[in-house]
Amino acid sequence: HNPYGLAVRSRLVFVCDGRAGLKILDTTQLDAITEIGHIENIYPYDVILRDELLFVTAQTGLYIYDISDPATPRLLSMIAGSTAF
Image (cartoon, rainbow, N blue to C red; front, side):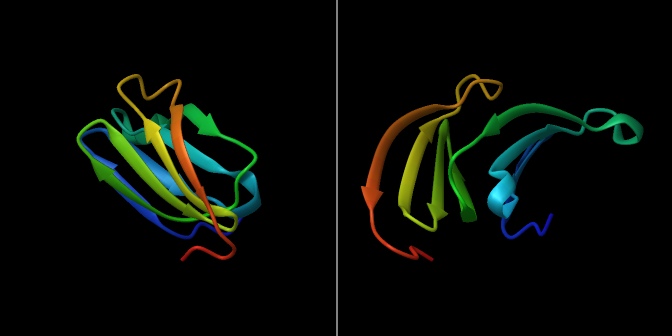
């Protein structure tokens, strides 16, 4: 995997992992980092956090997710476009 962008909030790390999608990692225990959430079917390049919103630029556009529950991100909106980075 070839991670691109990432964002950090407290103990959570949001990693853009190309074809593998976007991974949400819990780093509470650095010797046992766990994946608690995942966004599939996108090829993300970069990510920005704003309160409970996650903005993701991806190969097919800009995606906005509600991450009030980071284990289950919920898509709020998508603006289509090619190579949106």
